[in-house]
Image 1 (cartoon, rainbow, N blue to C red):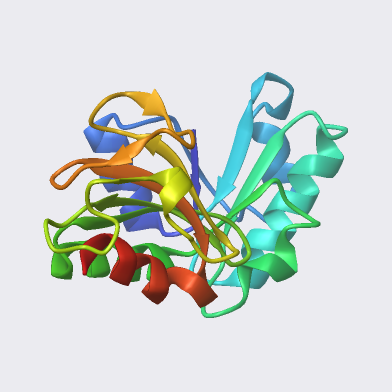
Image 2 (cartoon, one colour):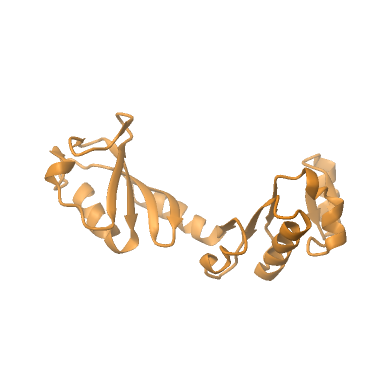
Length: 187
């Protein structure tokens, strides 16, 4: 179900049969009640106005007695500011930057920002990397970095995990050690 204020956009969405479309303001309790919040799992507020998104999420949470998951888009603001009020936040600009970085740097794929400064990345070990052909027990990763799994072998990493050139590993790391970890694994 989509709540949209723009009449033309409502008509286009209705014509495409994408979803049920309600024309109105998602920050209006009466409009939100029309959506059937009692039968809704989640409300995702995606307008370009952070305040409107927060208002819609707070109203949905209140009208559903906390039974609905709320997700809001943040625009040019620190998404952590809103995490105490909604279940999740979306920052399209940050996601776009992550996608751009992934396209630029072969062998490294940023997967997700977990919390604050912690990111989950996939890194493929380069032949010339300092860690190449060594086990995790033999490598001194900086505090703030943890090799989680060997994607290529499908295993959870342990001290005996060998860092084989050409293989990809999932690494959880904080932004302050990202360059050091990349240098260790890529050279």
